[in-house]
Image 1: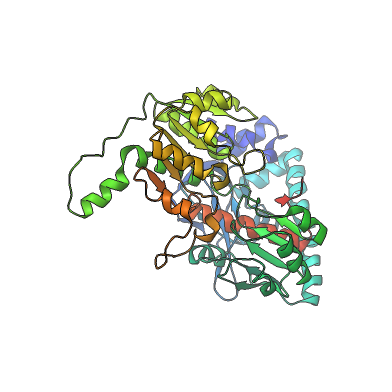
Image 2: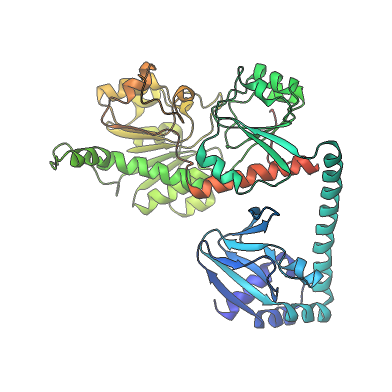
Length: 485
């Protein structure tokens, strides 16, 4: 990274916003850019600390080794975050190890040069003192709260429902020693809620039953925090939770790229029929008959909902050379600048060759795709849904598939998925007639709600969930709180 780019990055950092140009020049002269590959350790806990650093791009994990020899992820440092102030103040070694979560670029600043700049520029010294003072006050308040809790109960307790091995692995590497954990494979519901007895924190997933009777049972068992390790919360009776004194937190964004890329995977598989080709070739059938697909280039895609996931999908589809139409109550100027055109739902459904759904499930969006909407679409339209199953009227979709009006459907979600998804049911018949019928179509691709399932997403889910639990434990305001409308 050239010197002027390093100086510009330093100038944009809030800590250095008020310093003089001369101070910026001095710091930039003693700074350098360091590229770090994914998984590499930048430094180890206990190493000397000759420099501070700013994350220019990528993400780093700060890890601390427990007495048991296990590394626990304390936090993630994203772009713009600064590390090393603690060692600057104490003069001690690194208080934690730092590892690159992905390819990252750091700007390191020589510690001695930074200290000299503080002596020369009162604005820098004042900014550093403010940051360090805030850290000390926050840490003291958290420690006081934790000490009081330790007097009452040696360890906080959390029970996880509907856990799978891949989730457990992501959480276990981040669990603090002060947290007593119980893992339950069964889903949370009326029959299993009693298993939360004595656990003030319950961690639940997208298909757990969190209706009023379950909420009331959890409250009677002493539950005070419900931590959802997912973004959606349509399965939670929020009014019942509020009445019962249970706070609800969620993971609002774990990896929009994971879901967006799975959306594109479903679409490409459908239009090029690679799922059928794979099965054929494995059986020794190398015929291409029946495998004719179509180009995405030059076609029109409709993206319903342009939040983080929908915006990424729209951008990828533009990269394929598609015309992209979008519908959302809030238009994105960035997408418009990329050539995306916002239109009404009627126009989107009537003129799109591909339609992808990225809106939450609520009364206004229930069965958004129904017989009337499908009748508006072009013959051969391809529908992709990686959001919520209830957005699509499955009976209407089946009718449109049977008539040939819908050319294909890629579904990572299904309205009644809770009875089947995330489970191995290969030894039993599928008794849901609609799901069974869907799976008979060669132009329908059903995956088991796996759009979120990447290493990065699992790490983000675990980190955000445990951060919310830590906030609740220490009395810090909950930043991912969900409340009834």
